Amino acid sequence: MEKKSIVNLFMGTFSGVLFAIGMCMSMVPLFHLQLAGIVIGSIGLLIGLVQLIVHRWIANGGRFKLTFKSVLVGLFSVIALIVFGAGMVMTMIWGTFLLGVGVGILGMVMLLSLIPMFKNSNRSKA
Image (cartoon, rainbow, N blue to C red; front, top):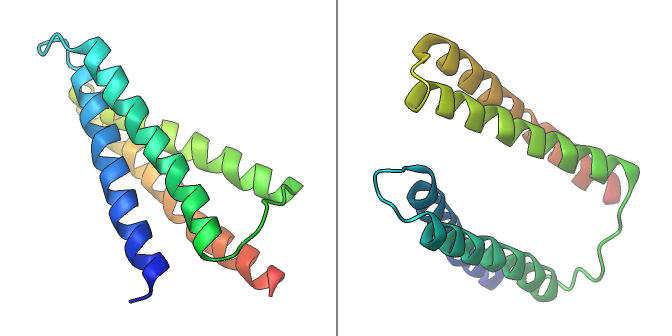
């Protein structure tokens, strides 16, 4: 395994776990830890941004080139995450199980459709 893959694996896992724990702490009112959850989730996001910078630095990627396609793919990924999260909220918090599962599956399909989008964007650069 390459050095950049190991660094991405550890930093991505650590930032994802911190973000998830922070969001759980802030969203579940039973815990009474909203502020601490927001802080821990923000630290997870910050580590994720540092991971992106470190990845570009290790891979000698240089600066980011924003294109219209990359902005659209980023916007689509944010929308897909919101749809997936809304399905989870509908199932666990609002009690609309069947509708929440349907919306969650739609969000999963949207997230899975990002794979060919990223593969096609990498091929066009080569």
